[in-house]
Structures are given as C-alpha cells and as structure tokens.
Image 1 (spheres, rainbow, N blue to C red):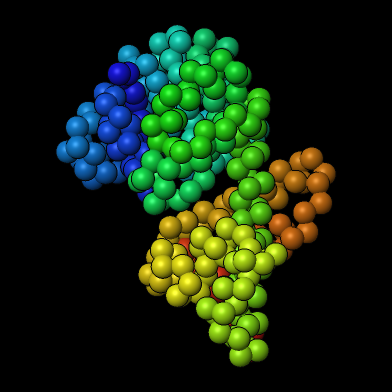
Image 2 (cartoon, helix red, strand yellow):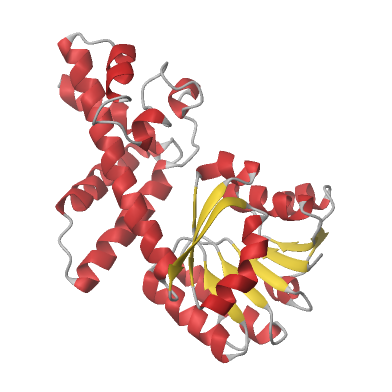
Length: 298
C-alpha cells in the first residue's frame, strides 16, 4: 500500500479521501477546515501541518480544490507542492478548473520530475462517497498508468481523455451538456403541468422514448419518478447550482478562447446565473425547475 497526501476535504474530497483509506493506503490530509480534518483523522488518517507537509515524503498527492487560482497557488512556486514533493511523486489534481491552468501546472510538475494528471470527476457527492465516480484524465500515458490504481480506489470509470488539460476539456463539455439537458427536461415538465399531463406519465413515456437522458432518468427534477433524485429531498444539493454555474462559466470561457459558438451553453449559463442570484447557490442544480415554473406563471 502507498502513502498518499490528500488536500481539499470538501463535499467531494471528503468522500474520496475515505475511499483511499478504505483501500488500505496510509493517508496524510490537509484542509483549511479543522473539523473535516478531525473527522477523517477519526477514521485513521493523519493530519498534515500544511499543504506542503501533506505532499512531503509521500508516494502520491491528490488535490480537490475550488478553482484554477487555488490549484496554481498550491502547486507552483518555491513554496508549492511541486517544490516540496520528492522527485517521482505521482500527482493527481481532481479539481474542475480551466484548461490553461491545468496544463500549466502539469507541465511544471513534469519538468520537476513528477508524473501528474488532471483528473476532474463526474458523479456528485453520493458517487464520491460510494467510490463510483467517473474520472476524466489528462496527461501522458505514463502518468495515466501511474495514477490509475489510485483513481480506481475512488471511481468506477477511469478514462484517459488525452494529453494534459484534456480531462478538464472533457469535464466542461460534459457539464455544459448536463446543464442544457437539465433546463430542457425542466421546461418539458413545466409545460406538461400546464397542459394537464401528469409528471409520472411524462416520465414513463420520455424515459423510454427519444427524450431520455441522464437528467431525466437518473436525476428527474420533479418529485416522484426517481426516488433518489434531489427533487424528493427538497432539492438538497447532490450537485450544487453554484458548481453548475462554475462549470458553465468555464465552458463559455473556453469557447471564447477557441472561437467556438455555443449559444445554448451561453443561455444555460445566463439562466443559472439568474438562479444563483436568487440565493440558490446551495440548492441542487435541478432546483432550477422551480425558477422556470415561477417564470412561466408570471
């Protein structure tokens, strides 16, 4: 078993780190929240004094951080993880960040003699806890091969997307599709309500017809049809609206940088910005159906 440093124990990182422990690895953790450190140390992890300490004298480092600026701050520079870690350390950044930042950090790590991948995830909090995440991995074949056994401890699907930054590219493209689809499914259910069609009937038909998609069959935004969807739990976040907005913004920034036209992605970002402005950041992203329903009623 390996010795692993884990930095970032939020809603996603906490569950992922527990699965590393459950796989039998020795785990050294750091987070700015002392309570989450105490919680996981109660399960067998060791507390690191700093992010750099978590990366010192370990075989591998996993990070789960909010944005590109945090990833660059933690990894780069004379006081960063790359400088603190021993040569040959395997580094996996599982944050969702912009492609350029991911490539900058992976390049710096590679030059310093590390094997690093960008490996953002899909699946939400429940999948993080269950160890059933999908990892979209960018990096060299060697770096992917080195990181895959550790990612496999936390996920069910580990996919090599291509060169450095490709994991991030896959993540923002995937979540742009997801955001668009959730809005389309929500609009359809609101229209069905207005037409007198029961939600259960629409679900029974569309889940077997050409309108079926993950936002419908696994994450239906109305109570009833999918027992495990947040709609049946007052839209308590499995994937928070704020996180969807972050990903849609990243997708639009990427689209602008390469001259891609994504009108539905742009409109979806605008709608989630409006949803966020209604103090819905901590609500599940499927809760946008309530905003759409209210707008339809006015």
